[in-house]
Image 1 (tube, rainbow, N blue to C red):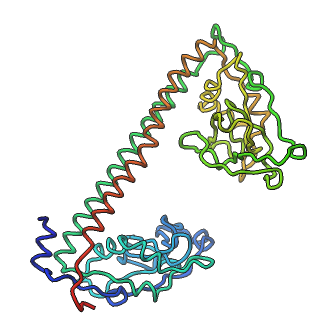
Image 2: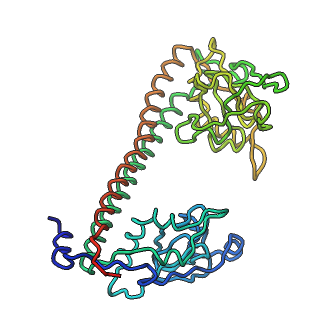
Image 3: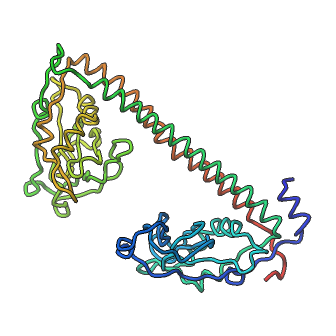
Length: 398
């Protein structure tokens, strides 16, 4: 039997009191604020409003040592927040302030509300902008065990939370180390002297074949998968999600035909580094004009060699020099194709590609494994949290 079981058996064997949230806490909305106000009066105090992260940092605060909040409107409606110290609570966040702090711990109520977050979200209305009425939130049933039980529950759950944060930090540090190692070897392996024997310097346009744009007026009623800029993951350089289009609903930017083995590079906001190799399932599909399509001439160069080279620091230094525009920077296809790269023998290209393939696999493996491991720990935490915060209700406790 655990310490919590012992405490429950000794202090509340018949069950615990269950009350409505409005009976044990004051639920109150924050003050109106917007991004313009924050920009005009920046400061040090985080603004807690409808999002998980602060809306910004303001010169004034309106809340101190009142950490529990619940998002009242927007996509995150019903989300439970915790902010310590001084901050500015916006009008899209309810404060949940305990009336008798000698009977209920802030941290206990936070964990309890977090455990009931789905129930809180179910109290909201979703006609138009999602909204949670304070009167509905106040009706939420909450279990109130003796203070000693609360303290032990908080100790256990805070330890879980801390361990989860430590694990996530360790995994992210490992991923970052792998990425830096991969980038270092990529830059070193693809670094050639201009006068090096057996290496020719050629423009990308010289070692890649011409590509075509689609002619929607000559196409029948066929459907295509459309690769937009947002389709390409910056984390693992692959296509994640696409939409199906035809000649009737195709966006104006849906113009470029892609083939298996092409390398596409995002020319709009190019320093975001959106690039990938087109896999077989996207052969003869369509991508946005926001990409430069590079179709390697297989007699001269390898697809993966081109792919790895446009990930180098040398390439992005060139892109930074050639891009134009401030709010919406872009580099032209012509400038991309004019970039000169070293072309060693096919045997040397293959050797480099084999090494970098292994490094990329190691990096991608941990990229995939990290969220899976964190999610597994989170589910474990949620399971124990639910077990710890499920009580036998004391008869007639309300």
